[in-house]
Structures are given as structure tokens and as C-alpha cells.
Image (cartoon, rainbow, N blue to C red):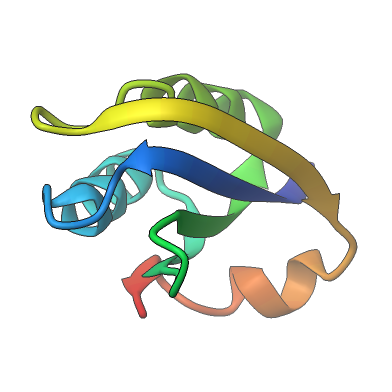
Length: 92
């Protein structure tokens, strides 16, 4: 069964390849969704797929790629899983 989660990652997460690395990790996990920079310097991720894969992504987001310094991750569930599942994981 698939579910969708929204993650907001704070810290030094822009300008360090975080979006591209997140896309690569999400695709490796066969997740759908997207990653984007926020104007406030955070990165947001909406990902859909099996709970186990989402748990793995959440752990990965806790450190991110080399050069990133993750200070905090906020995670919430998202009700609209079907819309997210209709797209490959992309950078916005």
C-alpha cells in the first residue's frame, strides 16, 4: 500500500546538491514526487510510495549529500497519494 509524506528539511541544504541527490535517492527507492528549494532556505520534499521506502528516504534526508548540514526534518502525511504517484520523482 502506498502513502505520501511531506518533508521540510532545514539547515545548510541549498547550494550543496541536495535536490539532485534527493532525486537520485528517491528514484533508487522507486518513489514518486518532487523536491524543491523554498525561499526561506529550506528544502521541501513530497514523496509517495511504500512506507518502508519512505522510511528509508526519511533516514537519508537526515544527513543528505556530502556538504549538507541537516538541522531538522519536519514530516507530515499527505492525503492525495494518487496525484503524487502519477509522476516520476522530479526537481522543481
